[in-house]
Length: 179
Image (tube, rainbow, N blue to C red; front, side, top):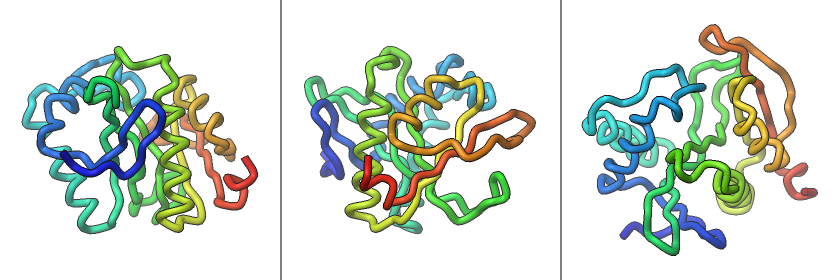
């Protein structure tokens, strides 16, 4: 098993590996998961395998990427969390770290996204020496907005992203230290 980067009370957060493909497929083939993500769920396991390869390339190229969330008590794949380095402009900004998370539906509403996102922010500011982290979500995605706010991120603006209104959040290391 790949070594954990981060552990919380309930979860191990580690790099994605090829064995996570079935979990990624379960996650991303669910239309409900894609409600606020463009409504384009995966149709094949190969799509999940390809996403893992793309994220593993980000690990190599940028030293960062989304990470698997594994339930300690069962070893089950729950979803992913972590960072993506955004190089193309979104909301007029580029070259920033985006905090994200996505969970298999049966794990929704259990505080997992908040617990793991907070742990990722701690890791970012203490181990990766990041100075700020951003987050975005569809304005209709109340659950995601709540997670970002519970992590101490501040809502700065709304903007159009691919024809849909989104929120723009940010947290600086100094503000995170005071949470």
